[in-house]
Image 1 (cartoon, rainbow, N blue to C red):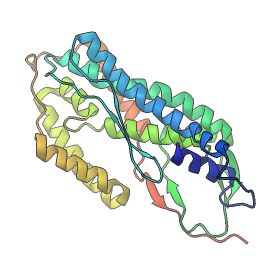
Image 2: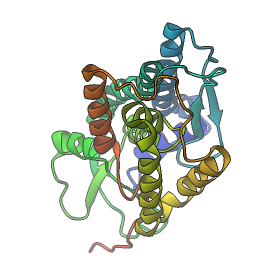
Image 3: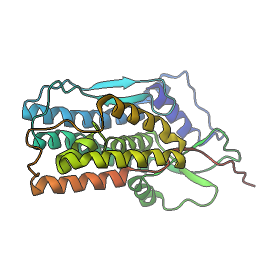
Image 4: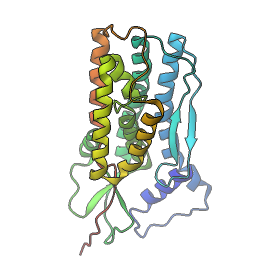
Length: 279
């Protein structure tokens, strides 16, 4: 709520224009709901997708845990569920793994469209020191163009807090779909490729390390991924039907997961904005 209220204040002030906002007003905090309700809906849908898939297959799992954190942009480290038993078959593993990203994506898209419709094009201030530039996933860029076209030089889309929640939701979807280890994408990769998924994990890790040279914003995620692989190993835990291929319908869903990853991925999520001066 506090981070959302800060996002709303930034949106209301149009990058630091002469507008004013009374931060002591109860409405200031209530406006944090634009962001907090949106991001909780996206993260909650993702985790409940996993949860209800677990319930469907009789797999013991916890309800979602949400992780608030004093981070200036997000206010959260995301959410997770605890799966308390081994998932026995590739089909169950695939369905549980892919249910979360699909459910979160289904909620993120309307949040993105509504948030982008509430946004506006605003002139950038003469000095952008201290501002950050958000990398635009393909889906986000398409929605921005649909509503606002290409802003003229010296102008930018002033994102409504709902649009920022959608941006973060898309990024979280992409992170979970990396085909690595115990991530959702790792479950999907193993269910499709079996033992060959280990090669995909190591190759993706190499690509992730390469991304840190494109943008330092990948550094934390890369370190966490390396720690995860050191703790659990690069090989996915086996299912008893490892050699049995998935049916065609699930292979099509795996292709859709790849499309979701491409639509939600950005090579440079957060970068300092270049200092620019307008006459």
